[in-house]
Figure 1: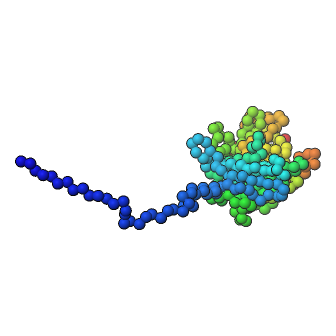
Figure 2: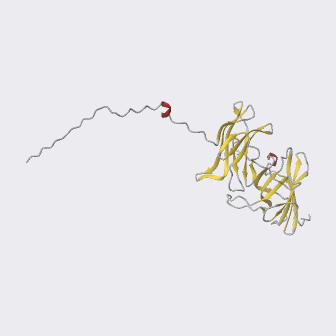
Figure 3: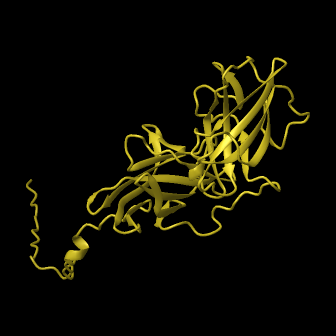
Length: 309
């Protein structure tokens, strides 16, 4: 028996009752420009006709990521469209100090690095000051302020870098500390190394030295002997430090003419503000410190006194 199958064909009209979509304006279809990075500036206000532009304040790091203890500053400086000789110094609020890095990259004046040594974190508040070098003189020509990831033109607001408080009569501070953890081999606060005295320390100035240079007189005892050494401080450019700034160095290497000892028990250090024209190590005392063989230095003369030749 045959069964009939009925197939119903339904036709579709080309028209639709739904409203046609509204065309998007061309501006909505265009890609949105990327926002300018907060840690970069097209330029900073500088002493005319000097121009400083393409300024970036970036974290230093490696393939594994950024270091928490370091920053890098990059910029371009020109005068009358020719390259100008400008350096950048960076100070950051770290460990309760206004820690400053004063050494530019030797091969390139248009970059600088900041390491928070001896601390492990570089903090979030920093200021960059730009120096122009001309006719054996240097002058500050611009500043920029970095706070919480944002770089702004000009100096940081007042109060961001509070000055230290020194005991009466003390104008400089010298604190021996352990070397940074990032160092492969630790450096003790003070030790005899290859006949030289090496110290890992933070130096802090209460006020700028101006036209003076920093000098030191060091008197040490060890192996039941006493010896002295005096010279100008060259390992940290103290004359570049502004009021209340601190600088760390592990290169505090002092060179006695004839070191009579193989180890140090303690030393007494006096720092002086010496005239640039002085012929001998002399000048107004800025501070005196007692440095034990281990541990941090303390302000004031050693007790009992270090006596002997």
